[in-house]
Image 1 (tube, rainbow, N blue to C red):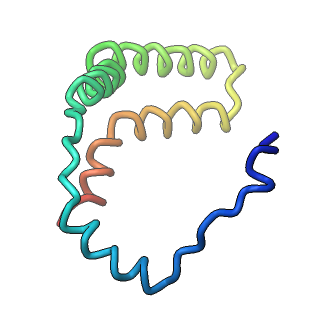
Image 2: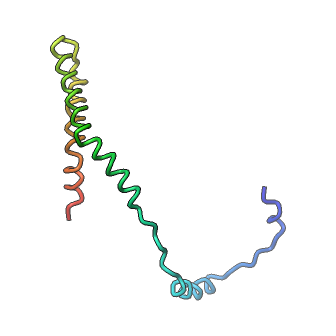
Amino acid sequence: MFRFLTGARLPRLSLGTLLLALPFFAILAEPALAQNLDPLENMLQTIVDGLTGPIGRLIAILAVVAAGYMMFTGRLNWPLFLAIFFGVVLVFSAATIIDGFAAP
């Protein structure tokens, strides 16, 4: 694939040359102008607001109602009920849990 490099003799830089050039590279380096990530942050915040806001609350209510109906008719297995329960708890307490980890 890279046949043009097979016969080429590349100069070898010594470790001393690299160590001598390193301070110059550090002095001459300009700070990177990092791109603002506000659009990405806004998109992710919109997703979080959608899942934990009124829409997410209504979906959780419907899941609990469906679990209650299945329990009423005798078709609810307990692993499914526990999955629904802990899923709702985790979705709505996720921000509190993460804030607890990130606290100084």
